[in-house]
Length: 227
Image (cartoon, rainbow, N blue to C red):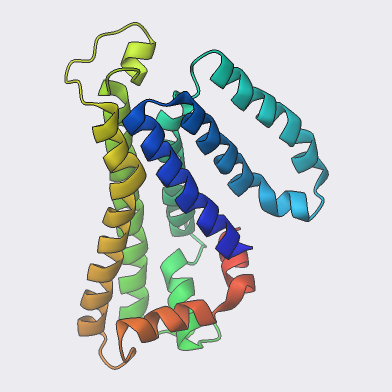
């Protein structure tokens, strides 16, 4: 299921970028439908009532936007909402009484019974890293929103009848929002791994070994982690 959702997310990113680059409403509609599939496929397959009730209005809404020529407008906000949602997942675990998200992941990798069993220096590092991820993601969401506002034609400001003060093309907006976002996240991930390996040597044989340990935590761990 996770693999299917990842493939749908990649498909959405490609369709959204092509729709923006070519200003093609049909591709924008396809992107919206793939996005809906990504969000609803799991609850639909598990026969969740709310998902089956939500499906018809979601499909109708996508078609109504296409028919009115505004299918591309929601695509401007999807990267903002998506990145903000991930930032919230990180940030909410920094509350008092909660275990920071990355601390829980590292405890799982280390085979520790709980986060308290980790070395205090590693606990501090993973807490700070969780905060760093939240800050980076909030910054990315702000950048996505700013670019969506000034995009032309059809940016958020122009859709409100306002002139864009620093217009950028929809293709330039999409290049960052739908493609480079993943590069920023991936780059931060790789750089942090290198810093962690130097700071706490001997824990991972290689980057591939690190990824294998993450995958080895299993789908149940990741599902419970993101709840």
